[in-house]
Length: 326
View 1 (cartoon, rainbow, N blue to C red):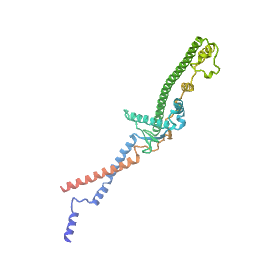
View 2: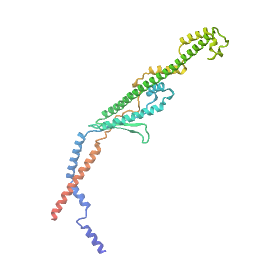
View 3: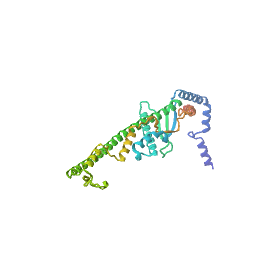
View 4: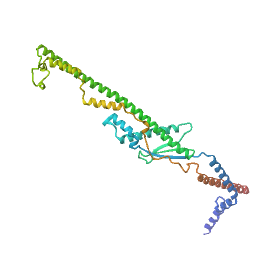
């Protein structure tokens, strides 16, 4: 028991042991110095809050356009490609995918500027392509809201121009294709007409050689190429004159292609009626800035001032004790 008591006394008299009560007393005695450091830290933090650049973030949420926003474009594709035109849902998904890619390219371009701008686009729900959240960071709430709306509109106008160019290219290609098809059908019809006239002319030669002037058969539906001369020279000459003056005999597909060509040539589309997105939430006006956070800055200032002040007080007292022992 005596040995244990001696050990306790020894530990309590150890100069290296930290005495918490003594530390508290030292800090209390130097409270005014600590308070002075806290006041200085608060002043520095206040100056930082006054001169620090503010950051405000405005956010909008978009998704694929509805049917009315791409109706004119969808109708144009139906006229161009008929049954082979893409479905409305495929057009909507394709347009918003194009919009997302163009917007991502814009965010990279803004980030690589001499003065970078922070514009982001990302899915609202991870793992799902839609809807998309678009955010922009600026020095004021109004500027952030205005700028994000402007960039959304800018990319939309870019997509409008791209779709207009694609549509015009398809129109030109379809016009060339249909013109070639119609030309081929007219050539075939002309060849059929010429062949018919040659056949009748050949039959006329046989009729003249056989001196047949009047028909020798009663049922004309039974006439073949070999027996056509039996119609007589008068009938054959009349048939040649009739075939020569008669317009080309064209198939129904020719007139269908002709109608399609006329429709495509008259096809006009206003690109401003096409929109690549639809707002789920328009750009909001932020009510809380991202930085600097006034409350957090002040709390950190108080803590740092208190820590530095306490360190100064304890360090000063430690030096005094050391000098006294020396």
